[in-house]
Image (cartoon, rainbow, N blue to C red; front, side, top):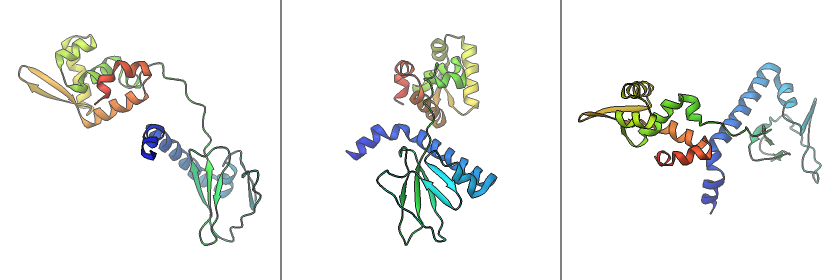
Length: 206
């Protein structure tokens, strides 16, 4: 049950969680380089107030406590899933740990067009989708609504970018996705508006 819950509620957002956490780490590292401890502790969030030598933290309303470092360091751990207030792990034999909530930005508006289209342009995005299960140059031309020579140029550009590979098959040239191309297509389909995912559902199975 726990694995199934993770697959539904956590796994689809892992890239977003890691990206946000890494951004927080880089921000704190930059604050440390620019202004030292004061800059890091001052910028932690609305739940913290730094008044040297004391860091005042809005903990749970029912808890009122003082934690003395006594020369020990404190590990700051950003948490994507923790909201509003931090929690602290205090073991006399271990360095104290402060797990604090990330400040989440308002959700971005849904994209007006497919991320793949924004990256490659409409014609080459269509070509990449068409190649998902293998396509000849003629099939690409029909899918994209372009001439055979234009389809060949688009395929060449995608091949030179490492997204597709081309192989002569009889009188035709068969184009297929490289592992990089498949990864790009999967990532784009995960972030695409629902209508685009439905239109490209066959490609998404790859």
